[in-house]
Length: 493
Image 1 (cartoon, rainbow, N blue to C red):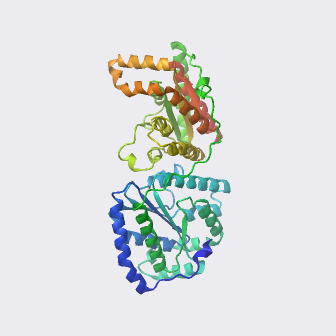
Image 2 (cartoon, one colour):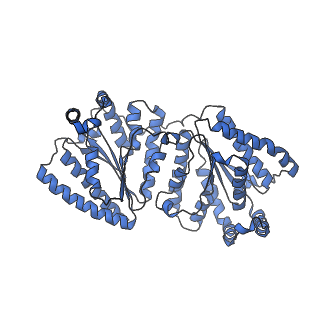
Image 3 (cartoon, rainbow, N blue to C red):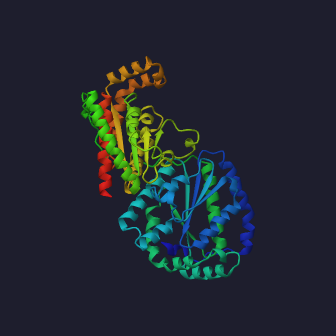
């Protein structure tokens, strides 16, 4: 694969100088037009030649207007990054619509980690699957993803490194690590080729660029970037990738996971108080152990309007130390959130080591309200099943405890609670005409919930359907599920 970029392409000084003004003008003009568009651009510069990558990133920054350009180098992880899934820092580096981001590095670091045994074959395979899935998701959300792998043969790299080391303008950033990395290149090349193959997503292949001649490299990448942005500005975004046929059989609408929830379950007040205190004490102790061991927790709450999500969440947070948790209420995307791919607003809220993040409504909105109300087209919400499963598997593989709850009540109980809210002054803000209107689509939501649970519940990120006609029972059941799951996670790690 890499041999294809060893054919000896060169550009003379004269040709380079003649081509540069038009190219630079075109790139800046494309940036300004991009500002008025509805998509972002990510230019990923990776390669086996660290000097070439360094120079290429600098060149793009020289040629383009840096007011509308962000650069992110994926070197060693910071403490904050190491405490979250590996792709968290990629999501945090994404640009909003109308901007360009340059991602530098990351790929050869992954190859080196596999070559030296820092990660094993299974871990590498998982990272590649997640990266490929993420790329597909970003492209479907409108991101223009341009990826360049800069390749220079080892002999040419050694010559370049010696020259750079002697140059007073570049020698200051050359050290023994660069020579050591060059010595390790041989074993990493086959791994790098595998990474390139496995992460060349439809619509975002890796372009291998011959980098022995810097002028050829610079013009090739610059022209490719300009052509891709120009083409996208003049055309419609790529369509959503074709969806694979579901392996899940359609079921009779009368036989759903919600039917199995026994809504008659209840607790008397005394029993409730005793069980609540016991579970809250248990959760407090488990949370302290999780904090000390750096194990984070993500709790996701969904359910019918007026099902008691807020009350259940408050009983959870009363078991935790202030400052150790964050409750994230999720509504329609804010103006800022709307500038990014769908999952971005959830990635940015992930907890650090030992912390809790509790989502009051979640990323499942795409499979629920957006599906039922028609806010998302069928291709988008059908694609979301795989995207969500991949997202949650990244959390679990990182060691995070994940628990998801659907609080289930009957239509009759919901109506009674609506009326109680309407008659209680300090609760009237909780009820709207839309809540009553949503009741008309109860059966549609039942079907959506059934498919959601069926297709996104896994052993380590399972759905708990909680009978919630009785609030006492529901609150205790939620706490019991959390303590059991967190204890299991702690014992397994």
